[in-house]
Structure formats: C-alpha cells, structure tokens
Length: 86
Image (cartoon, rainbow, N blue to C red; front, side, top):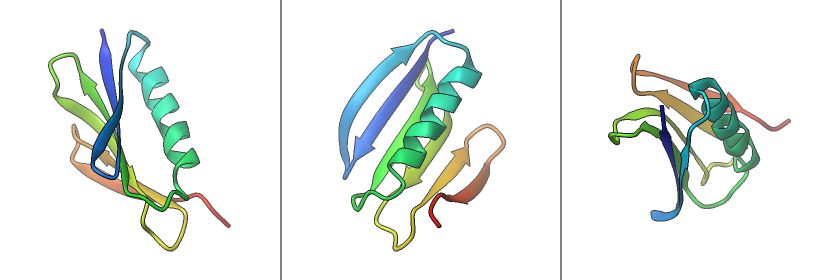
C-alpha cells in the first residue's frame, strides 16, 4: 500500500511524498522527524495518510517553551505528548 506523508511548517505545505514502505517504517521515519523538529520555533505538522487521503497519524509541535510534540492517532482517536529535551 502507498502512504502519503505531508510536512507543513507555519501553515505552508513544504513537502509531500509517497512511500511504498510498510506502515511501521513510515511511522518510524515520521516519529524521528518529529523528534528532530521538536525544538523548532514555528508551528509544524506531519500527516501520514492512506492513498485516498484519509489520515492515519499526525504529529504536531513547535511554538512551545519546551521541546515537545504531540502524536494524534486518527484511527483510535488517541493523543499523546512526548517531551524530547532535558
């Protein structure tokens, strides 16, 4: 299955890519990217979606006093905040 990954910074869509990897690999790569951008001053969002555009997982962060990002699971409707700094 193909997955779309959208990267949005400050409300502007910066990157859209299509991956044919397994869902686990796509989510792992997205988590690593979220950790790298957790200290960014601008708001950002990473959206992992199916081919039809239905979102599976989102990562949101930026504009916070601490390095943090929030993972939103669109399938189980759960959200969890991760602190990445000391």
